[in-house]
Length: 121
Image 1: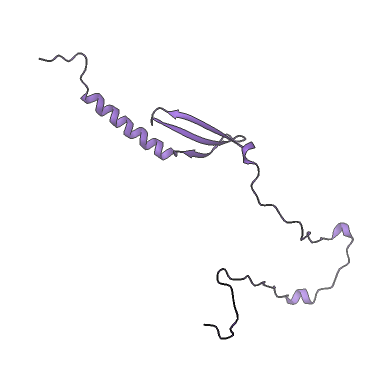
Image 2 (image 1 turned 180 degrees about the vertical axis):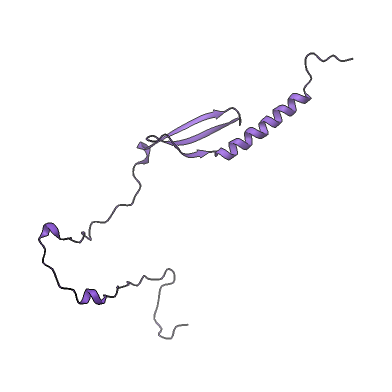
């Protein structure tokens, strides 16, 4: 319990600005006078940098095909510039596992299925 009886919001803490300490070399530095073409000006604080996603529809294409070995449909998102798969459902490991189990099933069915040349006695 607080002893100062002030009301504080519950939740995320408020960020405290950290002011870097000025070093000894900076305190003893001599100010310079440079022409504007050779000086560095601070960036405009009102113009913020954009970090939102670009229009990804122009960079990717969507593909769907049937994988016969796995016996399932595959959906892919492909980068149009590099032709690399960005995202795939189901992923490659699942497709390999499905193809393996499907081949086991087909060989099991083939070994138990009667052949047309077999004669019942």
